[in-house]
Length: 142
Image (cartoon, rainbow, N blue to C red; front, top):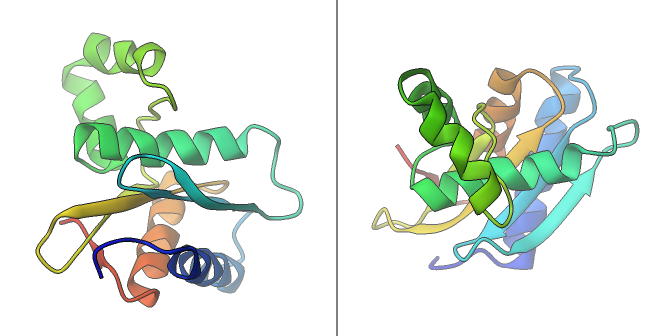
């Protein structure tokens, strides 16, 4: 699979939200982006707050822009806070330095998109993103 289709994006969202329901998480918002950072699909569960779509997109977009997960961007912010803080204003879709933005790769390890999830703790957001990606038959960047 060299790209994420709408069918794949919906499968990612369904599996991620199912995982959230099983774990009894707060309402999630899930964004799936293609390799160019364009939204393929986005869903917001009932009760999710109004800014969640932008946060989910920014987690995924930031991961794609820097080539690392949003968790690693958060780690980077500890050592380079000024640099990471400067990214949001220059990124068209933002950058959120918190776990929940995960890069999707093909069998060769090339990025084909990203998933951003927000709504619960960042660790839970990321766990649901990984479950969704793997359930769709795609791979997660290591």
